[in-house]
Image 1: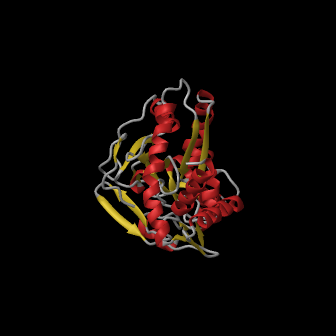
Image 2 (image 1 turned 60 degrees about the horizontal axis):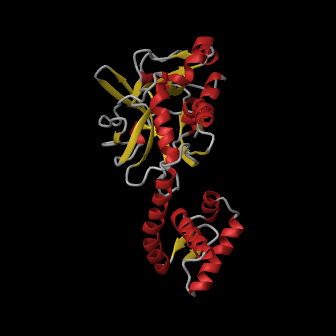
Image 3 (image 1 turned 135 degrees about the horizontal axis):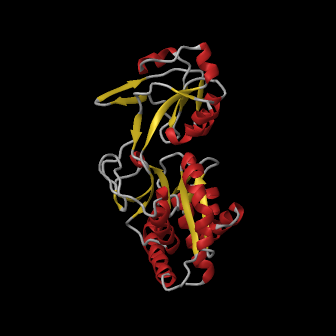
Length: 323
């Protein structure tokens, strides 16, 4: 196969998998206009339409779907062959593509980047921050980072951060005007800063635990955000009550800028994990990052075994992970 033909087929697979020219072009490192021209050249050469395009969507035709099914195993095989060669190098090289939730990108991944890149100068790390539950394989990512409850059952998970608690907080200024809640049900009378998760678009009730007690409160409020950091800043500035991970709020509690509410009530999350598919060849950059995480995650020199969705161990397959 000649070079131009291989480039055309690779471009087609990228667009067909992403269902989007802009994302596919970004993954390939080329301009969207160049990618569009490449696809047109392939269709002209084959004499058949492979993709149906509108201003809002891209979908494979019947012929395109058949070609995609034939090409994916072949390209996966080429990728595995290239990684086999990479394994013989003294220094792993290539690009590591990670899909990371926004809170984890700042608090967990960012501190790891400088030492990892210093230890592996031939590796380039590309990070996409995304709070949705997109398929990392279809998205062209080597691995993802999110809380354990949201990891699919067939993924391999490596712990990055310990379990944590969700805690209700408010500023002193807010509490001067509103009496602190004595019970989670009292939050119904408060202006609560709600969070709409991008992975399902739902405003979930706040869940609380105390010993064996479990309850949910459908809170209300005049501020809805899709970013926990924005909720933190808004609560700090007196906009209302927020429900946030304890790691986020500790500095603000120490400074007196936030006050913890409902001391006996919280919700424990399983922790944050690096996860990746066990169905594909693990590329050398990801192998290097997993090894690095095992040494440095949690600051204790190793990635610890952990529970995800009550039934998952680090470096094991996720099971019963629910949102």
